[in-house]
Image (cartoon, rainbow, N blue to C red; front, side, top):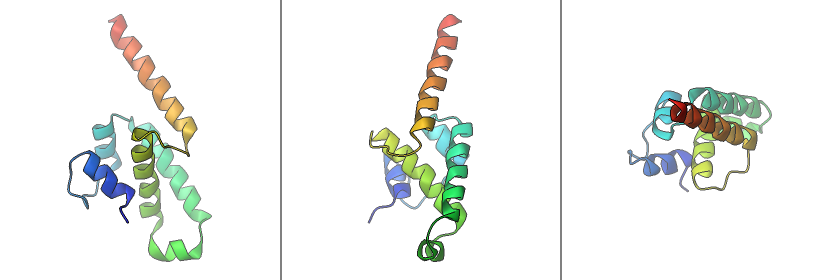
Length: 104
């Protein structure tokens, strides 16, 4: 089974096991870090409510990063089913940024 991290790395032409920081992901995807931090924090909260079986396999940071990778991959593939509010906020933010540049 291919992980979202591996899918992300393939999308951005990196070694499939390359570990990216949130800053790396932001730079590659052009998603501002504040949104990635929000997704990551939601992943940490979700981890608290996950099953013991999952907690045995991954720690909370890996779980939260998995959510970030899944968000980016699914958003790019237009199959996103979670954190839709953040995806909408990103679109609004980018639209405002484009409008600022056009006014200059």
